Length: 104
Image 1 (spheres, rainbow, N blue to C red):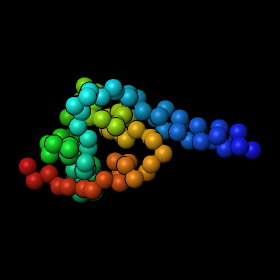
Image 2 (cartoon, helix red, strand yellow):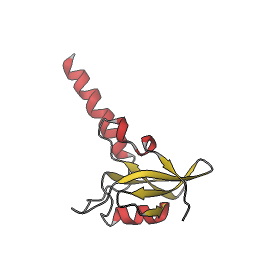
Image 3 (cartoon, helix red, strand yellow):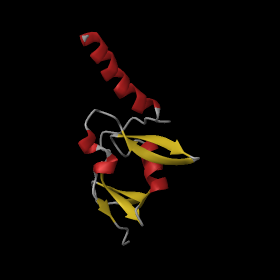
């Protein structure tokens, strides 16, 4: 039975990774996403650990360049967005982060 649990554990960590279209390698000085920028409940951007606010598109491009760590790129209906890399810890998922408004 232990083997079955191990296999289920492996599958539960592999499936979310398969949903990502790109898993960029982050640079040593890559920033972390510390909050989601939301307007009317929809994610419109990301706040980075250095205080910088990026639009969703800028965030995706920065992640692809390796400037944001711990995320992969996914897409829905042709729109790319960032998802946290699955690590079994739901506390560090992007959806668990605080929200800020873009008062730029």
